[in-house]
Image 1 (tube, helix red, strand yellow):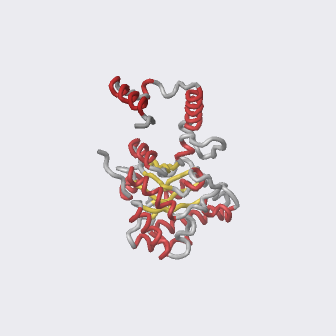
Image 2: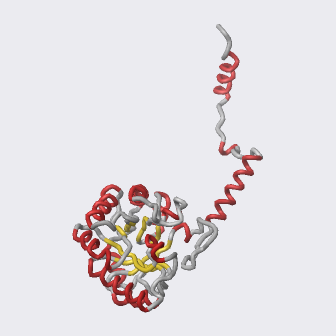
Image 3: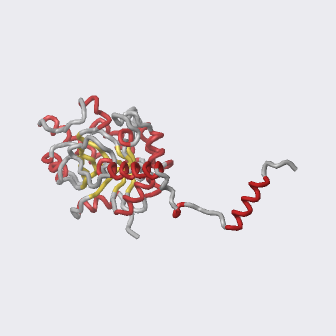
Length: 287
């Protein structure tokens, strides 16, 4: 049996220059398959709002939603590290609120770490969580919970001012005790500089190959969803077409009464059939 991944394992992977593979998961069967495949980190992302719930942003996702989905993923994970997102407004109000929210994700749902968005403005919260024994993964660059403030889903860190701020935020998060940082949709040069300067791992998404690891959304990676493909995504399968094709064939088989076939059908034995027919012949008759 493979050794379980921990936050210390990820640090050693960075030191050994072994890339970290992280992927989102929101339910038991998906997490089970990814865990068996050897994924290092399972992220229960608040991206579930968009790819599972059909929302246009991650903002409507609640802490109860995260607890529910994290619980399923944690049941499936045998070796992967399970990280759960702290959803919008479940940690921004105070460090105490962040501790309460994190406690639910870890005690009720089985997460081994939490992820939150933001830089210097969340440093005190990160420190409070880490001091209380909660491993924290940071998230910089395109931070989806701030999509309205950022003006949409666009690359961050193109200007010198933006790059300097993200760079300083990364250093501040490391100093506060974060064990890793997601860098989303930032230029590869900035991501590389941050990865070189930090002693903790960086996990990129739309940030080039020079981070210490990569993360993708399961539904995007497998082609579970159809339509728009984010630039940073690579589809390794096309499950949408496979599922729709299977559904159409099922509809045809039902319409033609070719399903269920003999292999899916149970029959009474001759004796059972005779007894049943005798029952039918006498049922409904008055004594």
